[in-house]
Structure formats: C-alpha cells, structure tokens
Image (cartoon, rainbow, N blue to C red; front, side, top):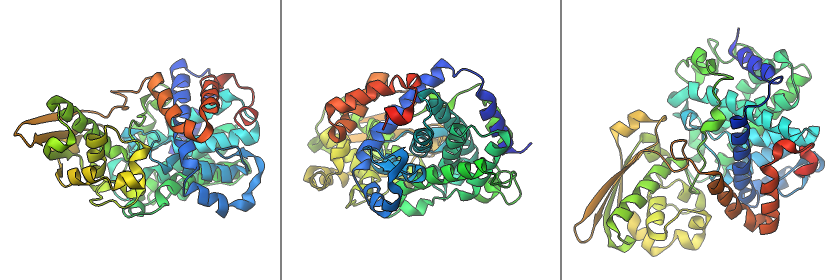
Length: 445
C-alpha cells in the first residue's frame, strides 16, 4: 500500500466516527487563531495586491475573502491563505517546522463555503488536513527545511486533504488528490532571504494548489500513487529518505492538532525563545534597556540563519531580524504589530541596543531542533551585573500553551482594528460554537 493510500484510509475511515472532544476543541482554537492572523493580513500587501491581480475571479462565487467579498473557491483559498501568513502571527507545528493553519484552513473554509458545508464538516476537514500534513512535515524533517519552505510545500497536502474531505472523496480519489498535491508542492527558503512578498504567497499558493488537486481528483484526475516514497519521489528529491511507516503509525490515535504552537509575538517563530529569554533575564536584573551593556543570545542554527537581518529596513525584514525583535522587546516590552511601523523601526533606543546584541549557534540547542525551540540569553549591565537564562520553550508552545483566554485576547487585539470591536466579539463567539453551525457559507459570509 502506498503512503497516500494509507493517509486516504485514515481520512475516509474517520468519517463514520465522532470527532474526539479534545481534537474538536483544538480545531476551534486553530480556526480562531487563523482568523487572528487572517484579518490584519487581509488589509495589507500582498493580499490586497492579489485582490487586484485576481479581480476577474472576485465578486462571484460562494466563497468569501476575509472582509466578505465574494470569490471563486480557488481565489479565496489563495488570497486568504496569503493573508493569513502575511503578518507572521499564524500557528506552528514545531515538529514539522511548519505553519499548518494558513494554507489548510484557507482551503477548508473556501471549499466549505462553496459547498454549503456544516460547521462540523468544516472542523473535520481542518483536523484531517492538520493530521495528514503535519505527519508529512515531521517525516520530511530538517533536511527538507534546508532549502524548502515547509508552509508552501507541506501546506499543499494540508490544503488538499481538507478540500478532499469537504468534497467527501472516496478512498481512491482522496489518494489521487494527495498524489497530485505532491508534485505541485513548492516554496524556496531563498524566497525570503531578502525583502520580498513571496513568503506569505507560499501559504496562498499551497491553499490554491491543494484545492485544485482535490477538485481535479473529484473529477477523475489521477496522480502517481508512489510520488511520495518512489525512487524519484518527494521523499528522496526533497529530503533524506523519510521513515514513512513512522509517519503514519499514530494516525487516528494521536491528534497533532492538539500540539500546536500559537504565536505570542508578531514575528518569525525562530526568534521567540530569544525574546522570551531576554525578557526573563531583564526581569531578573530589574533593569531598563538603557542600563544594558551587552546581550548574548545562543540558539539553534535556523534561528540565526532565517532571522539574520542585521539592519532591517522594512517590516518583512524586521520580522526576520532576531536582533531587532529582541531589542524591541527589551525597550518596549512586547513585539506586536506596532513594532513594525516605520517610526518604531527607526526608534533610536532600539537601534542602539541592537548594536549590543550578539547571536551565536549553541551546539546543544541546535542538536535539539526542531523538537525543542530554545535559547540561552545572557545580559550584562553597565554597572557590572549579569544574568543568564535558558528559555527551554517558547510561550505558546505545547509545553507553555496559550490558554483559551490568551488566544481570544490575541484574536481580539488583532481583529478588532479591522472589524470593529463589536463585530470581532460576535465572530469569535460564533467560532467557539462552530460545530453547531448548519451552513458555514451562510454563517461566516
């Protein structure tokens, strides 16, 4: 049996079973967090630019963009998927080095709205998309992440699985949807090693490609069923020979959707342990930023390489500058969306502190990546005191999770400026009761 068939067996076999209560609750958490990322991302580039670029696919169809504009299924998946990754506050599956929500939920919602599916069907599709794609991401591992951006590659499987579930594809067609998705998966790390809009588009493209793969399979389009494990397949071409038996071993028994990291800072997740550790060391010393003489950060290789901008000039670069976000946290107390406004990015105190920050790869912490995302931070003060703190996990990781209240507060902070406070509160109340909605298209339009 091929890998895609094993995933298809899981998905189709789960339809006759009730959704486990824990998985259902965490699926709603994931959707709420997705909206928290979607709404601020929907009103900035590149999502706003793609509304112009795809104008012929808008103002028709049953799917909707974030603010209610009608769209074709594929256009909604692409634009909403892009928007949900644009401001870097979307969820993470750390074991797969992957943001599952942006592509998976964008595809699930677009297809659910177009099909008039129920809230329960929508949540089931989200769960299936997360369970399949996170296992592929974990199997492809660190070797895949060296050159590829998992949210664009692995996210294609999340989107295809979610759409296939909404379409209620049979086992054979579901497997072919995944097989086609594999050969459409793309996204290069180099695309965001300099200032560009490509990174959020990776999530949007994955959402659209997944919808296309599932829609094609529904009509009889076939793919190579051995495309994942074959001699010239994805596992060999884009990784170092993944263990696919291990990847499928816990399907249906262990729910990865209960293991999400929900972001507590509005920037690259690789910087979070350093931010949290720096703030804790600052608290230990009881000092203000101006009293700091030196900050030393040790973390894993990806944290240094992916967030390595030394002199960020744009919001995109700022979100991927470990020195900038750590300095911002120490000067201003947080790293929220305001941290990337033009005036804040040129703040003299922040820029001065950046010059005192040193970043190095810590071999011990690097060896633990991706299963552990840690940082060791030492602060020296101008009066000769020092403190060192090992941040073993990021706030928001499964080990240090955001509570439901934390998550809702994050959503309200990010959604209210876009929707208005009353509308944002009404929407989140509806999202907490998604499983009771008879028609997602009507309720979330």
